[in-house]
Image (cartoon, rainbow, N blue to C red; front, side, top):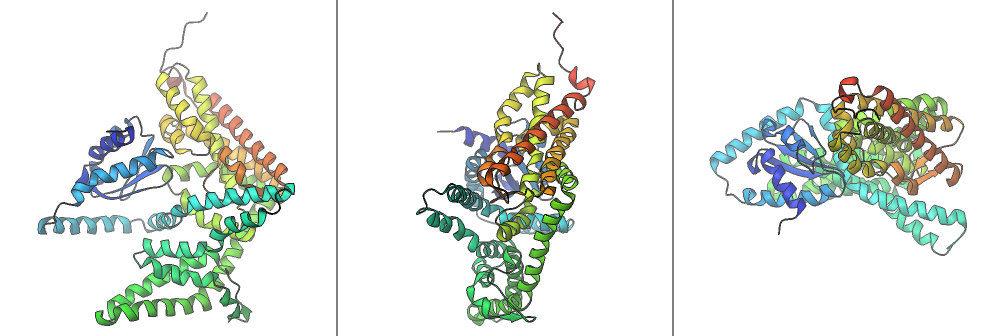
Length: 472
């Protein structure tokens, strides 16, 4: 029996060139990410016209189809099931030759933008970790609330262990995903990354300083696993096949482990400390201005799909301080987007189709998922996207101003924003004040995004596209 999700998958497939044109399928929280043999075969206008599609973003190797949270997780397996028959087709020499030529061309396109590709690869390492970060972050927030209230004291140690277990070993997961992403053996990536969090490193001295377990955090784990993948590939080229199963893993772990202990952990530790110091200095010294800039620029990053590349920075801050002070500031971009959408809803009150889109996308926007409103409302209209950025800038400046006063607003995990971020909030002045400052930032973003869009976001042609009713 066909479901709405299978219907959506079936409608998308021919519009991206059919099964033969699809190389890879993946999804994040809101987008179906497709790697395509020939991107020109994708009909972006027809994809945008599908009822379930909220937007389409072209990239170097394919396209990203915005479906929204929940929907994308259900549509992806349905889409993959449609590809299965094509995947089972026996390969022929002609098909293999064609496949090789396409992969070569695809690699050339990737290499044309190395920085962009690197950022997306880093994002792909951390995106699979987000569900665990969210779950553990919520539990950590609940535990902190119980501790502050002084209730259920017998339960709080168990909650602390549940929330902290994943963060204590996150380096291993980062190493596993890094090796997988860069073409190495995932378990070897996890093995070399595990060195970073192993308690025994406290017996190792580097540059006259004794290492500490966890020093370098996720950055050290990422670097170790990337190096391990390089060493493994080098070994595969030079080690005889008969010795490969014994020699390659041994050399990979040994050589990478030594470099990790005597160089990477120290260097990554210094870099991690610098990131924490810089983030705190930025908000405590230039808080209002920094918040304004960060809040204004985050929506363009989301539009380009590059916002996930910030995850390593957030994770590093959470490891160091227990929360990231950057996420609440960046979350203000979503508030500006909501305010802008509400203004469009009010101003274009006779555009039934657009108002229906806004009503369906607004709940997700209030919970910090901005893509539906970006691709369904503000970006197609043009100017409201800029006024939404203005709202984000105002909300960011609000939170940054309080950071200058010494009131830090942070999040114990990454992933949600908007009103969904409240259970994850933490700070240095108590949960009540932290929540109040964050709520003030949201309201400021809503108000400025609404006002800027209402008065400046819609030109006369857009307002008059639908006839106004007669007076009286």
